[in-house]
Image 1: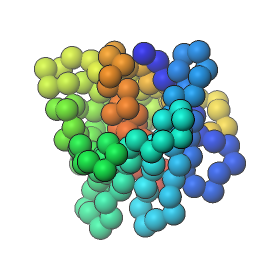
Image 2: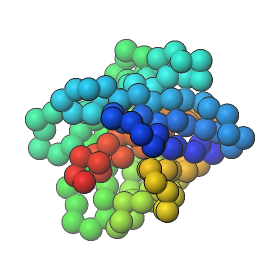
Image 3: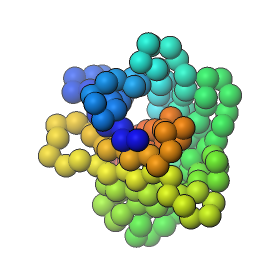
Image 4: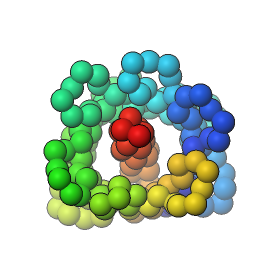
Length: 156
């Protein structure tokens, strides 16, 4: 399953539209004015289904992942020198990126591929392609990508 993750062009807060391969909207993401990033994910009908919320006052950036109101995991930027890495406490996943932080691989405990994430260059806004091996992992993979993008935006 392929998702196209595109930031809205004129928005004061983080807001994104997520499309499938046919161009149909699967999810919308709305940022909330808060200390730290808080991103609410809605399904295509506008119902709230998940939240990515940054913890503040932590040594390394950390985000909590919620399905509806239930905490399902945490993603923390790992301390590394060259290749960005994130510790994911969700489904036993691991995330490694390239030096420029544009491309990522999400793998499971056994090293099996869950998703690949590629940032598309030459766009006015942040645009990613998320290629998810199993469609049931799409929402959690999206939450991981949102957390990584929010962490990167915090540094820019």
